[in-house]
Amino acid sequence: MPEVTLARIAEIAAEAAEKAVERWQGELEIWEKSPDHPVSDVDLLVDDFLRERLAALDPEAGYLSEETVDTAARLGKSRVWVVDPIDGTRDFIRERTGWCVSVALIEDGQPIFGVLEAPARGERWMASAGGGATRNGLPIGVSNRTALPGARIPYANLEKGSDLVAVEQPNSIALRIAMVAAGEADLVATLRWGHEWDVGAAALIASEAGATVTDALGAPLIFNTHAAEAFGVLITAPGIHAAAVERLREEAERLSVR
Image 1 (cartoon, rainbow, N blue to C red):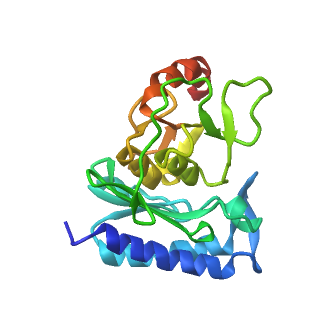
Image 2 (cartoon, rainbow, N blue to C red):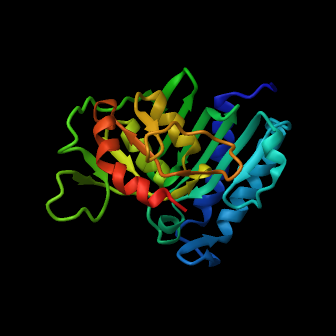
Image 3 (cartoon, helix red, strand yellow):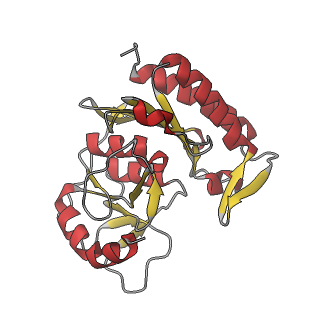
């Protein structure tokens, strides 16, 4: 494997984020890739930069990104970059802070390096497989919560009477997962088919911080799959994961059928 380090990946992610923050709260070209899925010219600018710089860092790795047309070429690679150039585009175009640049390096289906660069929040999240997770250079860890009722979830519109507790909800799913990694939330769950680039880096950060990381049905996440998708994520403090799987099981099974 070429000489690839977490520090070097973080440098590239930081350079990409600088390009994004220069345009944040400024003039943007915005359109919809599909209904309710906005994109800006900055998403493409950052993606082009990352594709070039990451390819130079590891020329043998494939590339999977929200803003690059996917091809089957990555499937023959043992390593692949999994990138979301701006995760949380809605917050980016609304001049809010809940967005980040997400970069993961996947090897044999699992993330080995992950970086979230969130310059509008002054945050850099990093993890390496077996090396722990940090925010701004300081080690992070999940909460020790053992009861699902009262668990904190980044969610803006909890149903009245819910036994969960709403906390800040950045638009970026990666940053919401990072909140669990840092013990600032106890649970993140999605019940829809989602893309690997949304969670590649954040899943490693969470697992290295001690979280239990699965899809919405409780199965392990696997990356660089043919469809580059998984049915949801369920990322929790370890003490509540089984209870969360059980609570979500019926709806998750129903919604996962295509």
